[in-house]
Length: 116
View 1: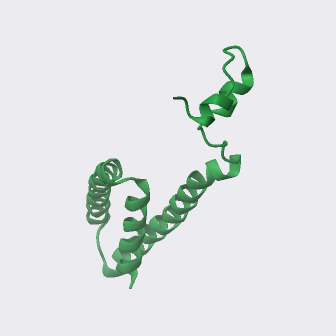
View 2: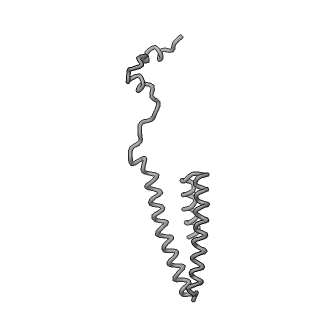
View 3: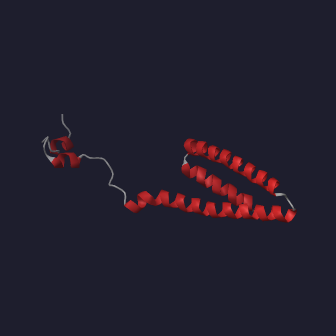
């Protein structure tokens, strides 16, 4: 025996309302809602870029005040860049494994804890 819903549903193959009546897909999100993750990630990356540059300048000025030679400072910054490449690799693996949101929040939390 057919259900009452099946009895009232349109049975015409060419009827465009038949497909619309049973289409379970959700309504499309607004364009700004679709861009929201991109906006958040872009802002946090830009803020990180500012803090990273400030840290480099502080380290350079501190090394100058301590009397480090140019070669010692160059080696220090080379090691900093090598460690940064390793960190980026680890963050890429973490992002692929646990998702961008969890990786971003944990990275920001580590920076805040490091400042405290």
